[in-house]
Length: 67
Image (cartoon, rainbow, N blue to C red; front, side, top):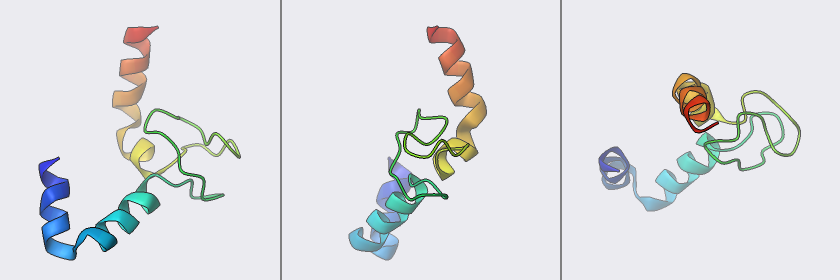
């Protein structure tokens, strides 16, 4: 949250929003995915987005705990 607020103050809301859309978009097809979609819900690309690529271990650890 705080990092997002700092980035918004630095680059403005529109640019920050575009960054977020790119960060959560599939690099293969551009579909916006949830942070918990390990693979793209549209084309199956792994990982589904930049967020998942950066946090894959934490997501998998959380998934194991809730299964």
